[in-house]
Length: 78
Image 1 (spheres, rainbow, N blue to C red):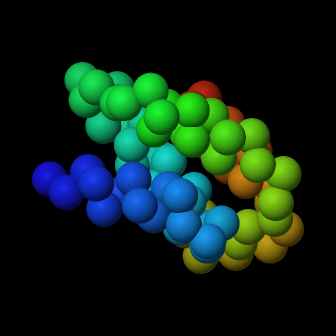
Image 2: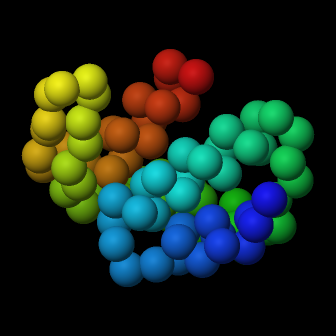
Image 3: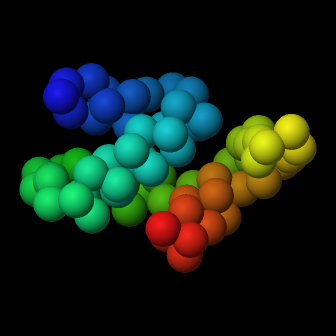
C-alpha cells in the first residue's frame, strides 16, 4: 500500500520503470484509487512518451516499442 513509492518510480529516470508504475497506478485507479492532480498529469505525460522500451509477452521479447503504445495497449486490453 505504498502508493508514494510507485509515484516516485513514475517520476524516475528509467522509462521501463515509469511504464510499470503507470500501469500499476492505472489499475489501482480503475479499482477506485483517487489520484492527486499532479500524479494524473504525470501519468498523462508518461502515457504519451515517445521513447523506446523493451517489453515481453510470454516468452517473446520486443525491443524498440514506444512507451505510448505499451500504455495504450494496456488501456485497450484491461
